[in-house]
Length: 168
Image (cartoon, one colour):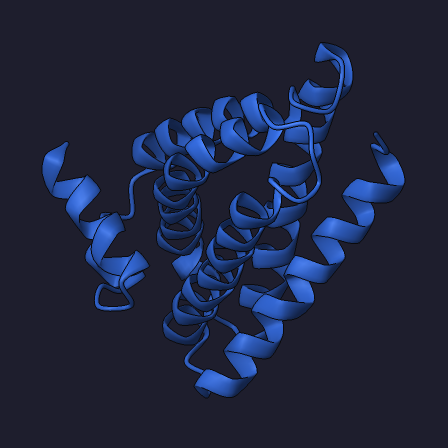
């Protein structure tokens, strides 16, 4: 398990690649379940339980669909397990880093005091887009700039759809 965490951490540092992960349905399901639980925890800061659960499931379904379409369009569907596992696993690592910042943010009542946790969270969001771009570059065999553009587009799509479907 420590070896898997190390691979996810290396991916977050832009040193590891999705191909280092085993193409394992079990690992995909494990990272998926953990990702849904962490996503649910974040959603509970602003949404009631039912809406938080729906938002978590929708968020994962959107990621599945986005990756499926990209891999299908580039004729690389065989990379689905590793790509999605890499995205979910790296998302878990970054999410664990973001959790204390989120708790800090919501424990403060004044807008001025929320500036630092907000800026640090923004840094993690940008880091997450870089990691997603890194994973997509290796999964799709595309130039880094296109992979980053796709990561940015996915992030915008995800945040906008989540805001429309699950406003708080």
